[in-house]
Amino acid sequence: MATADALTDLPPTPLFPATHSGIPERYVEQCKESKARIYSNKTLPPSVPRAGELPVLPPDVDRDTFNKAIAELKESLGKEHVELNDKPLVDGWYMEHPNTHDAFHVVEQSELVSSATVYPGSTEEVQAIVRWANKFLIPVFPISMGRNLGYGGAAPRLRGSVIIDLGRRMKKVLKIDGQNATCIVEPGVTYFALYEEIQKTGLPLWIDTPDVGGGSVLGNCVDRGVGYTPYGDHFANHCGMEVVLPSGELVRTGMGALPGKNGADNPSWQAFQHAYGPSVDGIFSQSNFGIVTKMGMWLMPETEHQSYMITFPKEEDFEQIIDIIRPLALNRILGNIPQLRSVIQELAVTGKPKSHFYQGKDPVPEEVIRSHAKNMPCGDCAWVFYGTVYGPEETRKMQLDVIRQEFAKVPGSKFILPQDVPEDHYLHARVRICSGVPELRELDWLNWKPNCAHLAFSPITPTKGEDAKIVHELVTRLHKKWGFDSLPTWCVSGREMHYIAEILFDRADEDEKRRAIACMREMIAEAAAQGYGEYRTHLIFMDQIARTYGWGDQALMRLNETIKDALDPNGILAPGRAGIWPKRFRGRGFQLLPDDEKTAINGTNR
Ligand code: ADP
Image (cartoon, rainbow, N blue to C red; front, side, top):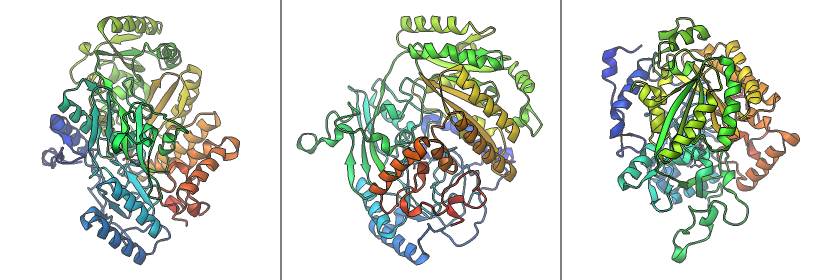
């Protein structure tokens, strides 16, 4: 472990706006503390020497062709905008993340890597890169920020692909419409950046931010990420895209397809999602059909708000809690996307390591978790519900009265307001997140283990206790079987819930990594056998999960492949993303299915 002295010497995190992915001044202290905590738990060196000839090449491309292609790319974009991935790999941390590989490597660090990174400065340059990729048959993988940690970070699905890092140079908030509460962003705009930009205008508008604010608004949206205000379903709140197709052609979706007067943008582009004809936006999310270079998002008008937490005493209470949540959610009495979290997370978000609470290597026993919870603001409990209501005082009061009354039906439940807990309690971070203020606090559970990384298992169920029980029981059982603490959260958006179970593992522990993969594989298979599927996943599970959506003898995948082959006949754009492989790579051992890890990370059995 690093010593206290070494920690005070940690170099400062780059600042925003000087660095597009940097931290705004107002977060500097919080950022410093977060970084020190995470580095105090690192035992791995910053980097290790790499083996073999570098950079790693994409499949079907020899070194001469690759070198010639890179020279041509440098010539057209400027050599400072093309970087080879031939140096040691540095995982860094959330705010100083790599764009060369998966910083949360659950397979070998050197497996999910790119060959190079290119930094376009405009949509025209993105088009030029795509045409270049077609010419040399080099696979490319777009990222906006590359902070998709837990789902593969900045790594490409196919080893040796060239990363198109859109965020570094295409980072403008192109428009904020204060009247209609909308904006248009480029890929490099983080939640931190959009928040700062809106503060500068003084407009009474909120953004919706996920748990940590360093991701890009656009990248999170196309990966169908979620936040916690009433605008928490990000894809449902986007409006209009500009997309570079794998051929290099440029399209605008929604009302943007109809040119405005004298060549201006269409005035309704950010007002109406569907326009005329097929609604195609969905095919550019969680896919490999296009590179989104601009996106419209709806913003939420500022309003009054009240966050709260409710604790419940018994593990088995969750079925009743969820059945209480359903009518409240359907009737929009729960104002936001609330969370029901397992009490172990109260321990983890303190930022203290697991060893502070328990010395064993096995999962922390329930009685130990509860004995610590007893001395914390949540008290001895099994579940904690975090919610927020919005609007003027009378509206909030009416909603809160119903909420309190309904949850009081669970014997022993306790209702807690922010003023009832200390200033450093997680509830205050929820107040900020649920009122559109980006945060870093959620990083704190990444101190649970040394060199801590996470993998998310994220199935969807209806908002019904009986469905929740099936998924929760299999997740609990399989976490125990494979030796992991289970830290589940239900995020409720009306009729469905995202169940997010984070496996926390030590990147230095090969056995733990092997078990994390085995646990994920088994959870995916068992959940699918019961009819439950994941909404999003890490790169190495994409093939397995895509197959679980196999109704009609893989009819949906055949449709996806038909679209892929029509749009991308050379198979250059993000091959394998979402389990969709272009013709040229199909049937060649690139798919990663449950028994393939040892032989086939990105086609090493090719
Ligand atoms: P974040 O901005 O949250 O860090 P990433 O940039 O890591 O997110 O992107 C998340 C996922 O979405 C990645 O798998 C990436 O391939 C895809 N993606 C990101 N930006 C784009 C884009 N502009 N066009 C198409 N796909 C994208």
